[in-house]
Length: 101
Image 1 (spheres, rainbow, N blue to C red):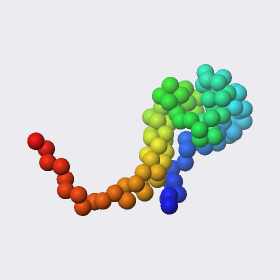
Image 2 (image 1 turned 180 degrees about the horizontal axis):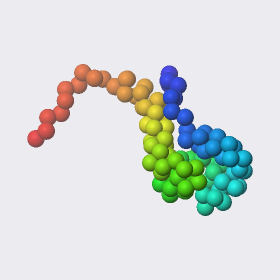
Image 3 (image 1 turned 30 degrees about the vertical axis):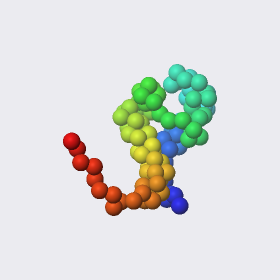
Image 4 (image 1 turned 60 degrees about the vertical axis):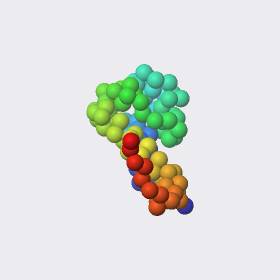
């Protein structure tokens, strides 16, 4: 059973800010220098925020690029933990540690 993910996808924040500014996906894409598809897939949680996109969002939304990258990292880590947890818990923990030579 997977636990509910606590970190939202950063695309949700992008969508919220885009709508707050009353911009279409196309307008945000033009401002960021990327395609409409790039913005759409990000907002739908199917892609992540790259360093170049974080820099573009820094200029557009006024939040530092490090904010955008941290949001992506938090989401990615939360997702990975949720998917990796069952495999980790099913592993035998009583095996002796390997000795280095």
